[in-house]
Length: 182
Image (cartoon, rainbow, N blue to C red; front, side, top):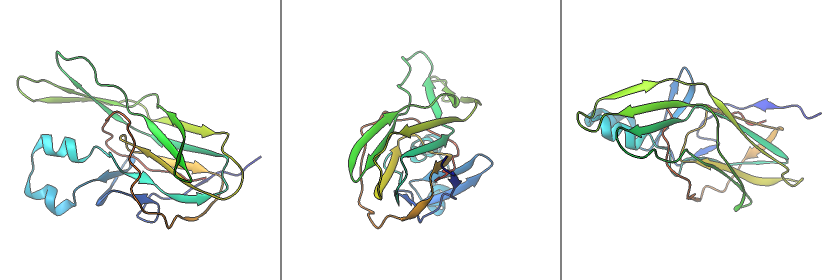
């Protein structure tokens, strides 16, 4: 049996975020630094900049499985068809090795006539990628929906590969997430 570990989500393994906000749920990555968000306290800007498109974990491991504990927040606009749920891509050595969704999460309802919002909280979910090849490899789970924690068998090192790896996953917003690497 493999021992799983949890690794704090920080800049050693997270790419694409300019700021990390610690929350009760974990870590919320931001695409704008705190000083920029404070200058423009606009609710729509907050909604858009917190969508983690392009934010991803990057690490090296011999893991044959990776789990992400996530708390996505799905945005629903009143009187419009629902947006697709967030999708998590797993890149191994730069190639797509899996794609999965997560159960649970929060729902942010937006009234399009007043732009008022209501948040319905939901449970965190786990995204699991299994069946990865043995041996040391660069692993990069990414999403447009942020991550709460990541678990893998022990991580060898943060990957030196910091180049962007964009995914084509649908957009979802998550209020806070931590990643456990085991």
